[in-house]
Amino acid sequence: MTRGTDLTADIKANLELINPAAGYYTDLKGVFELRAAKDNQPMPFALLAWQDDATEKRGLRDAQRLRSYAVQGVFPSEAALADLEKFHFDVLRALGYGARVFGRPINAVIVGDSAEIEPAIDGSTKTTITITLEARYTEAYA
Image 1 (cartoon, rainbow, N blue to C red):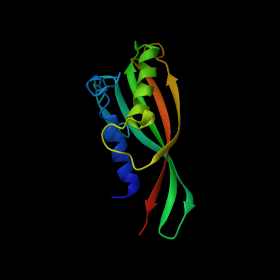
Image 2: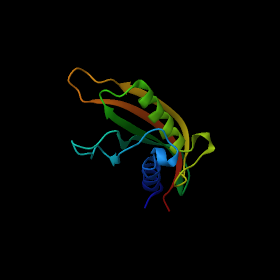
Image 3: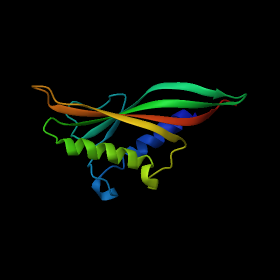
Image 4: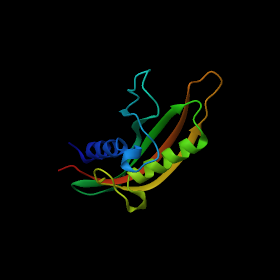
């Protein structure tokens, strides 16, 4: 597998550990890639995809890359703002913020993050928070 593929697998594995039994606030009911969750999936759950992957530095056999991931938390429309804030906090902790690494180490450095909440609109059954993570890693091509 490529290092990019390994990175995505490691991030997914760490997100799958988010539940109170592992020391987190959020009781995540699943992590899905590329919006593969079923319509009746219990909430909250997370959707994982990467949005952009760019070369920063290139060598003969490898390249330093910056990949932008989107982690979308999907909550019931009645979720409190505090629930979304705790999910944001849990995602960052799961990926190594606070020097607490749970699960698999991630072979990258998370160099930035941002979060945006999309509140439930009239008639909607879901509220979402999208966390964008910037991960710097080295891909080997030889």
